[in-house]
Length: 332
Image (cartoon, rainbow, N blue to C red; front, side, top):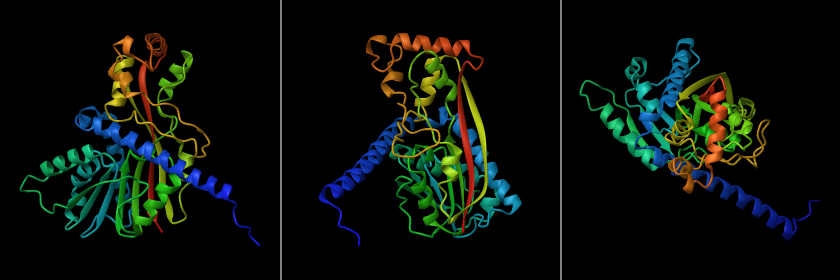
């Protein structure tokens, strides 16, 4: 016979639930704030993100050629872009004739945690379809929300896309379960996710200089793949690395902030084969005031000098490495 939990046990459970909720809320607000700030000039600075979208587009087109995309975009189908940013995935796919020709009455749900990003995406969407010769314009809906609680009914989405957004989520199992929930049977998901060892070069330079790295760590590919629910079939997966070169440390740090990638993640409650706790993100104030040593609180002039010296001495120089996991999933 099961005994009734004690008052202390019940309080412990409630406390853990509150901590998990607070961690999620704190992470969400941090990510939202960073991307709101980055929205205005995002596309001008998002070279890596554009390359990732292009690679994701290639994966989608390859699945069409191979016949592994069971439900291509057709009439009255619904597509969801999680972490849509300024709408790059949508514009890339809509430029493809195979999609435009079969997309009559199709609908797109553009979801982002940042209100400013959604506003930018809406404006670009209107501009994209302003030409009179473009027919079959899909119906677009712009909604603020996050991947933990997709504002969509179950079993109604035929296509899910996401590029360089899901890495900000701590609970991989919950995110993938939500994707499975909203996909209809046979529906497909194409995802590009930053994974370890992204930012490894700059992290190593920080460590060689004798300091704790000030960039985020990320989960590895195994963390995501082993979190897949039984309802999602792994059609294919592959990893690719995109790099960006910079003239100096300040330019490197600014490049991270300018696309919102200085958001802080918390992984202390998420088991991982590579990380068990978060590292600090690059503080926004650090980059804003990097030239004014008297105002720097997180980074001292000495630390900046030491890390810059380590970067200069390395073969890679001031390089950022973005390691991406590309997943093609299908709802059973």
